Image (cartoon, rainbow, N blue to C red; front, side, top):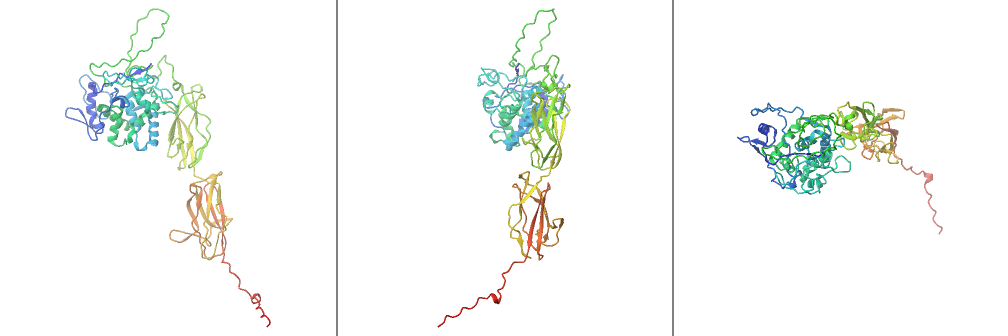
Length: 582
């Protein structure tokens, strides 16, 4: 059944409790917001852009939830008969929803780095728009278990936006409604929609798609969200209301102070809406189609009907507070049935720095009896002091299990940091023990060295070699770049000790040195040594080059006096020709 927001009209009066908390928070939690003497909110600093038509915003300026983050300071004195109780669980964000926000941030960091989009901003908007997808009531793909719909934008208390999608997204062929966990109106989704979970679809009801779309929407026009003015403009473009701006700013600040992951479906549900004004007449939620009549039986007392909570009535929603996970009579989701994770045959994980691991991590989700569980999202997270990433460039990846219950992580890519690190596998939306995998990064290596030229290396005593020594390093036939190497002028083929005579290199001061360290091959696997010089000792000498991984090459260097042409002997002098006879 579609869950409809009965949401606010712009400028509506908040509840008494909300008004008290707004005044207390205005100075402490809202950047650029103060209060005047009457406790009214006043925005200072860079002014946001002027009002824009509702159809040009993400939500059509639809109503939103007005619940405020818990106070960090002592509670203000509430009005008579009212108790203000901060919700201890507000900092928790449902696992799949949190994963979607962080994945969207990572994507925007790569595609629009100048935007500086923080995932906490998506979380703040998601909280205000849908209570984090109704407390994380999503399946393993990130799709809401039922549609989240705003009221008809029919001009009665709201904007007037006639249908633009023939009801394709919102099921309404007369007027548009905001749709999904980030509350996009159909006309905006048509161009702003994104495929955030890689399933080939752009679904506003999917939190991965909606979060990525919201990120791109907020980053358009070249806005830099690290700048207060651009941040205000971006938020106002989402829903053009000063109250909305200040509320999102407060949740942004709250989430930046620390959040944690909680299981899907256990998030705190919002309770206050900005159309909770005296005399407000929100559009009622659509009713569930009646079930077929059951056979007549013994009479029993009629049970009172529980009204649907604004924003949707999911099984186990209960209408207030945190939703009850899997209540009696409700079919558990695949995620609910997972008891543990098992390694699915992952081999030893070892790779050289800069290389991609040939083996991939596999984990299998199982029930308590060992039965495989399909369509469960498994998150793989790289931990430890390492610059390794997945092939996606990120430190985490969320993968659905297949029909055998197995999830295979993207390939690991080693950075330059050597040593061990850990990859942890966990079930998204389920609190079960994680599974740790140890991966090892070794230093770059070469198994073969070869000279790039064949010319003999010769020099006269006291001179310098005309040719420089250049070698190419490979590993299993491929270029071995950035491989550490040393070069030493050794005494003999069977004596690798440094020679004390013969050819030498020069240091920065021009002094002779016969061992070079700290050498590295370039990105083509090439290494050219500095110029070589010779002392007065003649003979054949050896230069040995060695790399990490055990590749070595020994090069001959010859120092000999220059050859001179011999002087002709008397017997070799040519005889004078006889003069011809007169």
